[in-house]
Image (tube, rainbow over all chains, first blue to last red; front, side, top):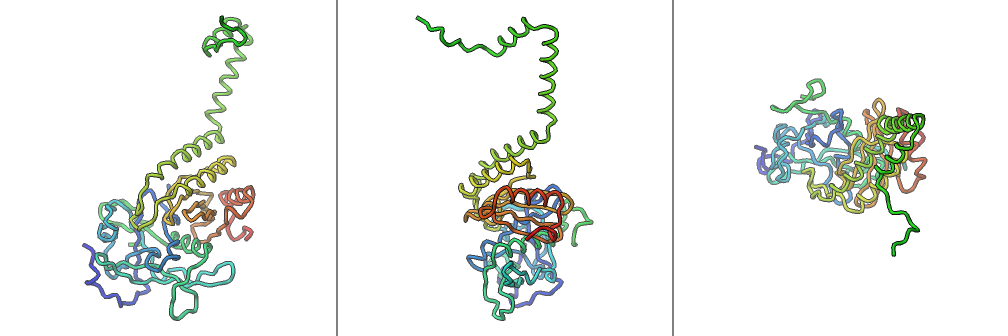
Length: 168
Length: 176
């Protein structure tokens, strides 16, 4: 059962070795089992930081929680695959074609029934306030491609994942 | 009174029967050889097979119309009818150049994603989004990428860049 919002401390900093989990349906992988960048949303950077790419932080959850309905907008995702990347591996900064640079960082944004919920946020490099800054399409796609290459499958009991590929 | 200015339509089989009755042994073997050649050409032509596959994907695009929002459990919008129509045009262009995608999927950005696997680590996704953005995203498994706007570039050149990428040209060597 995932921890609720009132059961987590949202002031806890991210450890560089902490994992960020993301789930995906089997159709969201190609024939080689690779995570497709098109399964990652960054268009919502236009609307606000809360709808940036969602992940769950491992400090407050187990991989099984990622496929619990409480953390999936009520959808049954129990047979979906779970992937993870290490916080320290987040690609940052990403430089746009016009030379503008963007930092990428994890931000803990707990939801009432899913206390581990976080987003991968973006701000202009050097902005100490870390104010939200919408990156251009080339940077968004660079982020999607890099995240897709970093996300590795996680073994969950009852799910068949090649051990050689997995993180844990 | 019936008019005989136009011959009544004949059944195909009766035409074949007529030919068979009037055929010589030489013309008969020619007919069989040509029929065999056409059959082999259809069956074993990779180009033809790929086109059939792509047109299957185009008709399959209609299934995305019935997709609901939150299809990926992360709240992504379903593809709009406009993005699906644009994706059909893109697939037709790709089919004309014998560029065969692996699959067509909804995009988490809201829209349609056309998925390609290339040689080695090279991959590509052509996306048609609900906000009318259309682009080719070339990438590799090391995390390098290059985005090219579909509408603002010459289509022939775009498809040539995509083909080269899928054939294994490294991203670093590609012109920016």
